[in-house]
Image (tube, helix red, strand yellow):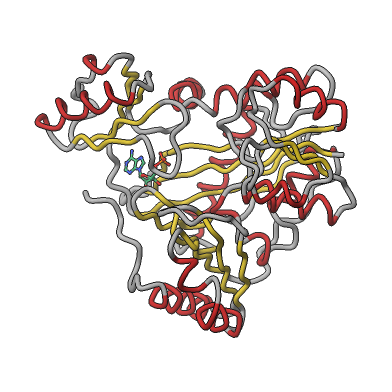
Amino acid sequence: MIGVLGGGQLGAMFAMAARRLGYRLAVWDPDPDAPALKLADLALSAPLSDPTPLKTFADAIEAATYEWENIPVAVCETLAQRIPVRPAPQILRVLQNRLEQKTFLTSRGFPVAPFRAVSFPDRLVVPQDIGFPCLCKTATAGYDGKGQWRVSGPNDIRPVREELRRQGHSPWVLEQFLSFEKELSVVVVRAADGDRRIYPTVENLHESGILRMTRAPAQVDPGTAERAATLAGSVVEAMEGVGVFCVELFLMPDGRLFINEMAPRPHNSGHYTLDACTVSQFEQQVRAVCGLPLGEVRLLCPAVMVNLLGEDLIKVGSGEGLANLLRTPGAAVHLYGKKSVRPGRKMGHVTFLSEKPDAAWEAALALRRALGRPGLPQAPPR
Ligand code: AMP
């Protein structure tokens, strides 16, 4: 039995991959409605800080992983005394804190946007090497663009300081705003014996900090895709990470690449691998966690993934909207079965597959129109 900390859609897709390879699952999530709990042999619904389920969980499993980075490191450390926990708790500790992550990356010579730690709201100043515009982000617990404030000019400093005071989530990271040309990401899998697989470089479109669409492969020249893949592979190697990692990158107009952040788990931008690759990122996570040989990462055909967020589900999650989607050639529909719809909440995704890349792209744009969002997701203001 494999244990998964966190039971959201990533945990559910991991659970399905694990079941396919004959494993049983223990899932632990505070939310009784978490999608992966329904797929578990042992479903624990309690706060992750609660010591009682920890014993039940630890006694039942032979290996553990997690589906998101904001889980208590202490729980992983306790488990790691008895069983393999992958990625290792010390990696989780670094990656769940933006400051530690960026400090690690710069110490190893990897390119990140110039940044500073902000330990108190009143210490928020914008040094010359960062300049305006810049972004202030919480060091921990931020995701999907939450816990981020834009500082466009000197007049923004005071309101952002007040916002930080209200939040009280110190410390924060102040970083330069990069006027990137594209956002790219690369999923890297590394096994305990050092074997490594790198999925194709993909291109991501965000809106309000949330991923909307992923295009695989990225529409960039082969040299850029290769550099992104090599960079991502080197970062995971430098961490000696075992498991699945996603490295998010900014491609600058002059061709430079910067690392935005990395996650110690399968990533939304890797969901296309479920339908478009020989072995999905979730099955690779199972393989890495259980010490099995890694699988092939070959892209079988071009793909475009569109997230269904919040109210999108009302439009295409049932009735005629869903019927149209299900009738679309090459559309692979995934609905996560979450009970409540909240704005921006990830409710499902659709991957469009086609031998002709333009056809997958056109089908994705048709879905955008059906969702009442014609055109491409809006990039953040420059
Ligand atoms: P994050 O939560 O840090 O991944 O940020 C969410 C999104 O905000 C990213 O995918 C980008 O679209 C945007 N973003 C984050 N950091 C920067 C930056 N330094 N410069 C420009 N855009 C950024």
